[in-house]
Amino acid sequence: MAILLFRNGVLAHTKTYNNDTLASTSIMDVMRTHYASDITPEMNGDLVTVAGWIHEMRDLGGIYFLVLRDRSGFMQITMVKKKTDPALFDSARRLSRESVILIEGIVKEEEKAPNGYEIIPQTLNVLAESDSPLPMDITGKVGADIDTRLDSRFMDLRQRRSLAIFVIRHHVLQAVRNFLESEGFLEIHTPKVVAAATEGGTALFPITYFNREAFLNQSPQLYKQIMMAAGFDRVYEIGAIFRAEEHDTLRHLNEATSIDIEASFVDQFDVMDILERLIHEVYVHVSHSCAPQLRDLGVEPVIPELPFKRLTYDDALDIATQQGYSTEWGEDFGTAVERAIGNAVGEHYFIIDWPTDTKPYYTHPYENDQAYSRSFDLMHPRMELASGSQRIHSYHLLRQRIEACGLDPDGFDFYLKAFRYGMPPHAGWGLGTERLIMTMLHVENIREVVLFPRDRRRLSP
Image (cartoon, rainbow, N blue to C red; front, side):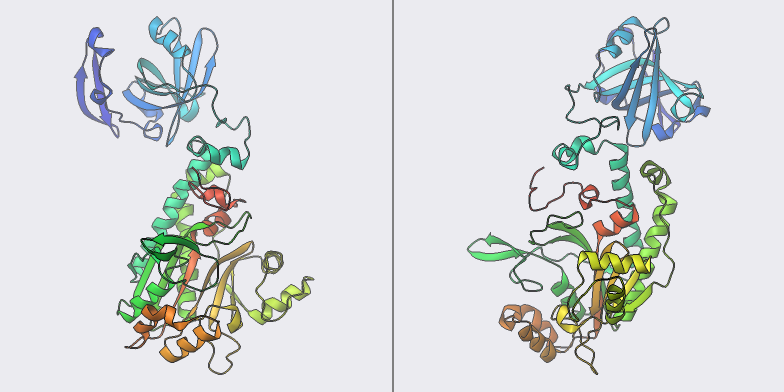
């Protein structure tokens, strides 16, 4: 028997087997060459090799259907009892859902089948048999709560909806990198084990680092500012950050992925421009590159228009008051207030000119009114996405601000040292990857956009 092996629709080579050796052939001898998305009805009559998981089975007596699933989609495998080798037919009927199999068969155009074709198998190899019952149903016929899904995350990720989210996440980060590099940014990687808190406070995960206390980093902030003193001019990082707040909400995690930039010889308005153009580019890229995944999610992202609206902190405070919420001047906005302001604005927007005391010590106050700072938050109507500012570049002012925030400047000596020998004016921001994705895709729970989320209750898997 001759098997034609194709790679992306092109004949790669031919292998010939007799009936005795075919059954014992090593899987390494038979290349897996086609994804479901590679096959088209126009390949009618072609011999293909496919592999994947058994998604569903339908036994109609004389006809048996297997729906095979791989990363790219579904394939219908059709066996007619009178025309199929009896051993192959009986073997297929004994299979369990989610078993992994390899099929070699003939493509047959069939309008009623998914994607307009079916595969008539000539050989079937069971690569891994699945236990039964399954820990959860992935066909969507039986729902599962978020904890059940996360406890068996490997199974949950087999769902088309879950897979679609992470294909889109890949494209989001690809778009971010492409955009920032086109803007002249260099990618860096900063330590995640540090000796000092980035922003002070108690929201830190302490660890024992040999015989010393250390912490998991809250942000790359201090190190990306040091890179400005090093003359790197424009840097970005996409990396993990850790916050020890005991939140238990739909939009907070204790380990998240932050997209950070820092740039020299700019002010806060320059990096706001970079941020809004990046958000716009991400939406455009996902809309153009992820059409199948967006269909799986039933989502059609609305590409935000440029430029984004800009409200001062005082403007936002007035809107909150008009919406019936009372917030003291100088306080941060809580979740309910953010949503009230977001509902009133109805699109992406910036809140600028925050009170200095609401922002970290490295935020530059306005020279003519130090009660306000050169700072901003990027808001989606549902929640905050990013925060940034022009940074203090004066050693003496920075030291004063650290002390004013109740922190010990001696604990920041490695950081302050960089400001003593020529630090240019600079600005930057940090953008939450998960929040960007969940707002774009209308996902309610942030845990759905992280492969293995870490919150106050979940440390495994």
